[in-house]
Length: 279
Ligand SMILES: [Zn+2]
Image (cartoon, rainbow, N blue to C red):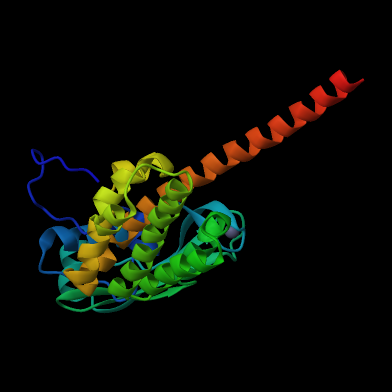
């Protein structure tokens, strides 16, 4: 995570206002905005009337696709919208490969608030198939917990979602711990068990993806989430933490592919060598 103190003017931007995709497709249900915050209200108005394309995973094509705006209710200019338009708003996005592949999003606007109230297919419906590529590297149990976290966050349950992600994270560290132990790593088991998570990561870092070692603060965010952050704050940071974990898993997949390929090549070379020298 960026940590530049100099430029930060402490204007905490809601991460779901950062992109069209985050706003329409990734924002959890019931996420609510206070329209008295002028900057947020303007941004919502702008995102609501976005009239361009959007790259997203299509659950029917089962791959990334380009979506464009389907059904959009065009309302007035900013102040007119803010002061006079109340009620339901429906937006949709259509897959460019097939116009029947359509994502719908529903919002409710009152005088003071703007809230996402519905989405079909749900956030989980399109995020879980994308998590499928992590099934093998995670194993069945961990994969279930990872997708449960995604499902909970999509339904507006922030702290619970964080609990599952933290379990996935802890499991990655435990896996590395077991590997280090099997190799007879030179640390005392009691010391390891007593150590704080960031110290543990340091002790077994040879067995961990680089991204995890560099971004061990991810764990602090997860723990803080569970103990100190509100339901809403957890939901706000969920995507950031999820991407961090995916980055770690991507790195593990690449390392495994490389090791598998090397093992296959080694076996093939030995076999060829055996044949040649045995002839
Ligand atoms: Zn499609």
